[in-house]
Image 1 (cartoon, rainbow, N blue to C red):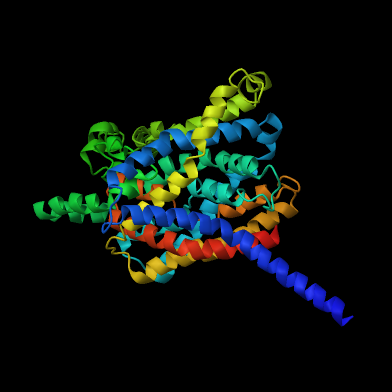
Image 2 (image 1 turned 120 degrees about the vertical axis):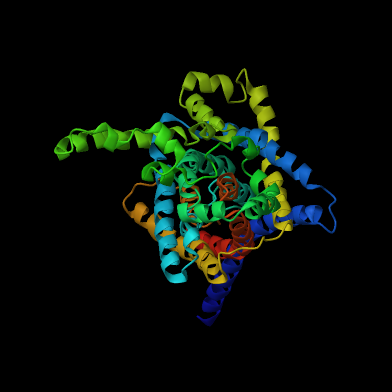
Length: 450
């Protein structure tokens, strides 16, 4: 009996050690690639200049990542899969809403500077749902004895890619407007004089290079007349030249009818609609159709039409040589992304006015508390039978959506809006540094749960 209990105990210890190794080993691979990038880009070494990392970022953005998404998602997607995977984009929305609530709690508890309230909420709410997910899935599936089966890589990349389109829409609509400079803060800067106006572009340039180029190359070309102004606040408070020129005054339009509140309301309603239209016109909707998003949509369209899919995918397909070429290019995505991340970390954190307490609050909420809530949400969804039956990779990708640090793309949006640029740089640096430990912890937990 004692020998039997000893064997069970030894087997349990061995299985625990194997679970820890299976969970941590993929992250060690990613860490090694990141360290290579950090060393190559470090200012004391500078074997590779920053301009090279910028070029590598553009290659990832317009070539490597779209090729990976197209080849893997196009193979897997079908009409049946499209209807059964619906919870993946919904889960992105849920994680963002829950993150916003956590961010609001961080604001209440940590009390950041008033002008950084919306920044705190966004940085807590919006995680990386793109490159980092694909990198983790790629390294986890690189081992032959992974817990997800022989089709691990194809399914993992397909699930992660299927979530990207909703995340991109959120970034270029909700996040873009939430990251506009606060009205009072903007007015203070305008009254600060020429010295302040000269200093701000310099401070923005300090954090601009790899942080901005990492996930949105060519962002400087997207700047418009109103991208660095509190445009929504100006429009809806009718205090800017834009709102006065674009929107007719209700009082002037309703002269002679001051005794009729009903007529004023009738005139006011279209004015609000016109204001919303003005805001919509200045929302960068065109930026949504970036190469990775276009690759996702094209893969979904082709994959859902069997005749076209047979022409593009498969060993006997007439265009198999093209998809095979895409597959070769896709292999460069994961190492390139991690090298770029290492180059970004080599720049170090910028100075931040966010405050240590708020920074710690965001990191704890984003990296420790949100994943726990994600486990509960995914478990509830599983009990309600709305997940793909008996698919561990499906659940793993859903859990990852709650686990990753804030999206690097938020740094690009901050630079585009001229709002909290140094703060986003510092916070992204420390989040990605601590994410090495939090991801290791939660990957062990996820592997045990799955």
